[in-house]
Image (cartoon, rainbow, N blue to C red; front, side, top):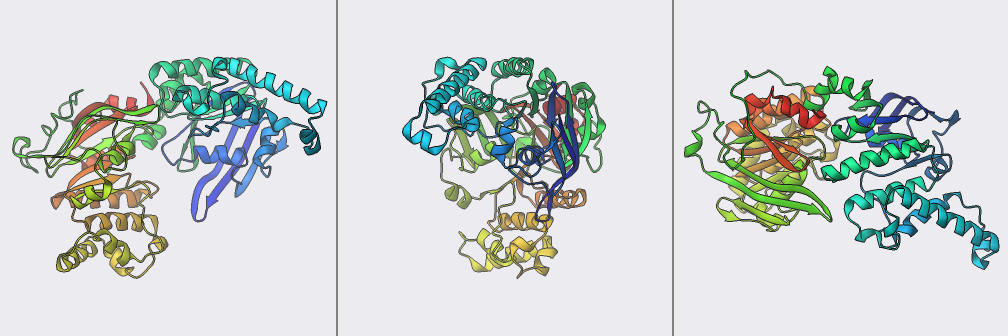
Length: 519
């Protein structure tokens, strides 16, 4: 039915898809999984015409669709939902679905203006079709409600109903279970299976492997834009290449120590290596989260998070995509406000404090994606990190230390930040944070998008910063590499802290694998 052959998609110098082969048979439910940034949504975008492939062919039912616009792809029988809900929130649920049904309208402008009988008959058919799809997904009783007034899980169903209203032969679902609780996910599994019984072929991107295992016939795995595995969910879960793609490949395996446990993370610090650091009882907690909850609208994304970071400690925070890691970092640094709970930094309650005031206190965040100023030079980017400081002598001393740590940056001191390689940009982002003299450094996915050699280099830099006395909370996609440099690890799963222990003991713990790939 769908035949993607040797498709490549480049964004400038970035290869998002690299010669991907992807075939979907009529009537199947296919899973599409992979780590963050592996190219899953990009593949959907290329198939549906939102992005044009750089090379390769895409055919659907024997027809070449590689150059079609999105609305013509939809007319041809392929519909999709989106990773982030894209409803018209100011209109009713029924009207949202009607907009999609009208993609097959044959009415002319004059007929619409004058309200010709043919147009009225067509509108009646579309209305009946929209109501039929709302009934199919089980939300017809909400037809007259504003889309934005519905709970998150129901908004997901509206989006599915809207896609079904185009009468697709192939339905592409992009993370439909994101933000749902376990019971809602089970209902979603039933819905997807029901839609499949209607003769609709389905491809589903999903990070929750329990959902994938419960619904798909076969699974395709992408990593760094390439297909690395294809098979049944059970085969994929136990494939060594898939496990390495999700958990990473550690540099040097640490010996197993005592097993980790499900403990309250505020008891943390007991796992610190006394040979490298002071015993936990002599180290002060510098950052404490107490029962922190965060929601995006109706979606509760962090659930009763309690976490303590000790002075001089390096803690790795790991978990699958969508677990809530970046949300937690953004909440700590004031970019998001918790709906409840308390965040204490150096004994001071900073819950809800503005980001700039938190930075001024020495709690500094290096965001996912680096966030450098591409038009500014390397020097100007670093100076921006010291913007709140007034002692020019100390600023220069720290600048010298940054150049000592990252000699490549000194060589490129007058180059625009945007002209640096990915690894150099990450060094620049970390260097800029160091220029703020952080007491606590929050690093969010510093290895994302980097080659294995650069991943090792960046994580060694993190280790060196820690050795110099920096307290570090590290979010990292490469779980094994992160645990190899950390003292302690914490595992997030669907917004909850489910596991904590010494980094050494977490390295081989099967529960870590289960958090990424399911049990």
